[in-house]
Length: 474
Ligand code: PHE
Image (cartoon, rainbow, N blue to C red; front, side, top):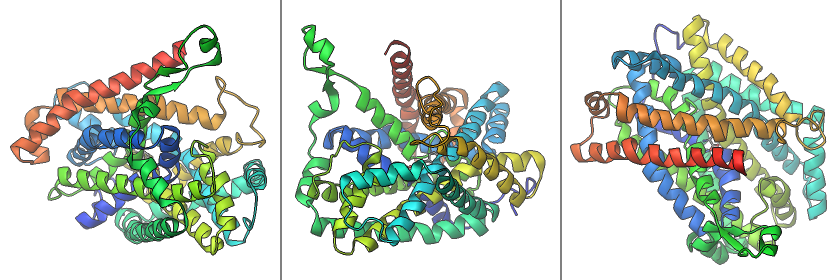
């Protein structure tokens, strides 16, 4: 349906909001945010994260949505077109390219973790977690990610669902999926928060998440060698602050072309500023709700808050295996993760699909299948790089294939894409064009313009320089 000639549009503001919230809310909120908050010491991390979401992320959402809507094309097409209108170098099209290529790389491994959530939903439903202890939970996870057949099946099952939805087009696929899935997700999450609140340690959770301790955030333990050499036990470090900035970008789906593509399906009557605020508010509420659902269980069962990426897959099954109705709660939880991941993965497949569709004029189904299968094949490398799986011995600069792709996108493509997007809207598109596109009240516009022009580039510039510095020096 969404042919190159007749670019598709959302049928309503509600459909657009649900799609954008669906893109933003994903593994980043429910799986990554709680474990990063756990590692960042809780409240202080949460507070800094929220500041980034509202002062940097939200203005960037506005920027990407308005660029997409102005361009009415894929991220690459839109960036080139606007650069031309503004008499700027066609090289600005590279922002579109980095988004499209970045999204293609991210979906290739996002789908692997998405597959894990599907597999864990099935495991839970079959009662695989009944009364398991920590060791068995860990063995279960490692033996699953090491199994070439199981991981392949779950990865392609997840990718298959994504392709199916994207192939059906904007109104037929994306909209239908998100308008049902997003409300379902909120409902399941609410049930889990209430359940955890009654059975787990809610008081400790509230204290942990909302009572900031900045020492926890700003200092990290010094190395034994440094202490032996007379250094302090703790040293000042911005690592977790920068982590919070990166997480705010990832969580809001910025810099990968997803929001820009969704913006291109927007009609002129939608207020971009208000929509961005709604998306950011919904995204952060889901992250906080995920924390409120997970930490009571973590505290009640004495699990480690700083467990890391294994928090969901290795720790929570222990809790599900012990609690009454654990099969139901566990299956709901992993089902919820899968739903959240699917509504994000469709937005990751969308930028490459919209570009190829525009370039070739092929029908959407053909493009969705081609791009999805290609990303799926690339994803096999990630899937097989985990545990003791077939490619686990391959290391790229000391990283597994999966981690290398994550590093490339999260630490290079996303900060650079964000930085140049902010510079573009702040300094290279005329103020008049942006004012016209945003149609905001004068005061609101000035706040946005200041944040986009000065605050975002400075903050992102610092994060990027710090990443490069750590990589080269550290
Ligand atoms: N925001 C999604 C999440 O939190 C991931 C994502 C990033 C989706 C970038 C699209 C683009 O899981």
